Length: 122
Image (cartoon, rainbow, N blue to C red; front, top):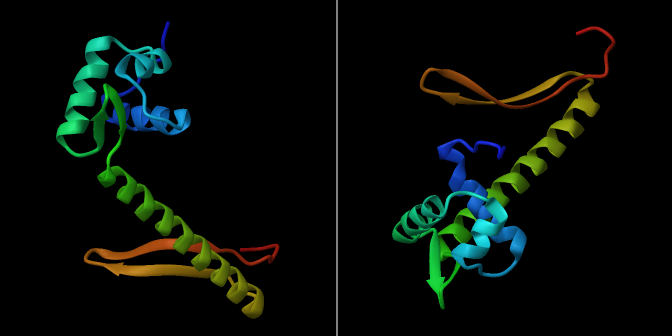
C-alpha cells in the first residue's frame, strides 16, 4: 500500500521530484515517480501553473521563476543562519557561557539560535 501524503505536502513532493529529475518532466513521468492518481497530478500541476510555480513547455513541466526565486531566498536564509551560528559559537568559546540569540516580537522574545557552554552542569 502506498504511503499517504498529506494534501498540504503534495506540492512540495512534486517540486522535489522535479528537482531530483534535473530536467523538465511530463505529467506522466511525474506520475511514474510519485505513483499518485493521474487526476491528482493533473489538478496539482494546473494549480501550480496558475499560481506561477510551474511552467509548461512542450508538454513538459518545469519550475517557474517564482519557484526559483523562492529557492534562492531559502538558500540565502540558510547561509545567514549558518553564519550567525558560527558567530555564536565563537562568542561562546571566548566568554565560556551559553549564548542565546533572540529577537523581539509583539508577544515576547523568539529564540532564533542557542550555543551551550561545555560546562558539566547547566
